[in-house]
Image 1 (cartoon, protein in one colour):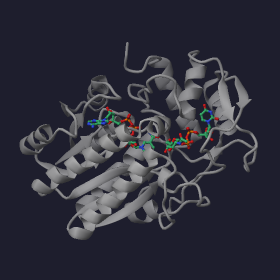
Image 2 (image 1 turned 90 degrees about the horizontal axis):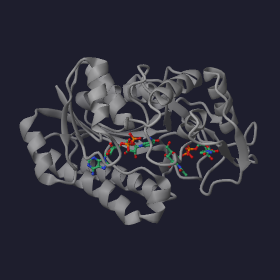
Image 3 (image 1 turned 180 degrees about the vertical axis):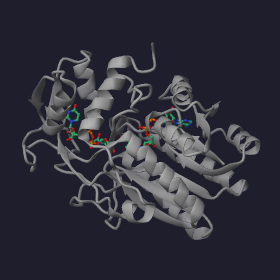
Image 4 (image 1 turned 30 degrees about the vertical axis):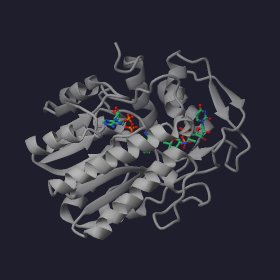
Length: 337
Ligand code: NAD
Ligand code: UD1
């Protein structure tokens, strides 16, 4: 049974391919490599000993997508492809709307044409906006505070409309919290281009000597130690959540949102300490001003995914730190040699 994975060469996509292949699914990947490397796909094959059918193409390219559906027996789609940097989306909103929305519309049109009506979509905890109080659950009102977040919100709405128009669709909207970590093998992981925006890749680049110190953005938040608290989730747990979501879309019709998080918050200083303890490597830090748009505390209620997808996160902060470091120290330049 073939699953089409858009953006399958990326961070979460590559880990998801490993889990799908190990669960017996065939993987067809489309990626334009705008934020990734084909080497990630080759490494997925190395980890699993299985083949991935890879197409270097843009999801907005109707002809290319049509051919993929013609050449393969696709049962369901996991849609990761899109741009994801919040700051960049504020500077270049049109680029974000154009890629994230257009590629989704093209994909849905082709899926409909081939009568493939099962889709798992990469949404984000960002759709909870800044007004809800943690633990965040799927019934809370959604909103967005930047163009990236609005693309997620709009795509969720588009998918809900598609389901309303035809109840034989099956749509899983997966709202990820903060994905970190890497595969145990150290062969695949997160390879951000330029200076990382997110905390864990920044910490690991300080550890490997690429950056001098971590800037801790604010120490006057309403949390145990004053630094921001987030729900970090190991990317392998997240990938396993996608296998469960695929089982769900293959077995039922419906349109549901599911949080994929651990249900626990960890502060910036707690994560830094856990990294130092897990790896034995020093991570110097300085307290810096707050980053615009950040809030005190974000963590999931993970009950719905547990109940309805039979999924919950198993790996803890120590695994997240160890596996991030194993990837980072063996691949200091990511996939570039
Ligand atoms: P990533 O950038 O590593 O992966 C996205 C992949 O999509 C890349 O390989 C990129 O080359 C590809 N791509 C982008 N536009 C494309 C297009 N038009 N056609 C073909 N390929 C295209 O990002 P990731 O961290 O793996 O995130 C995957 C998805 O999950 C994204 O939609 C992202 O918004 C969402 N998400 C990520 C996080 C996170 O922190 N990593 C959190 C919440 C949601
Ligand atoms: C960010 C995105 C969010 C996205 C999520 C995915 C912003 C404003 N939000 O969220 O849309 O869904 O990533 O993982 O970019 N921190 C530091 N120093 C750093 C980097 C971060 O102190 O160098 C702090 C932040 O202030 C925050 C915590 O670390 O308290 C986590 O930051 P980050 O990894 O960027 O994730 P989010 O802010 O949760």
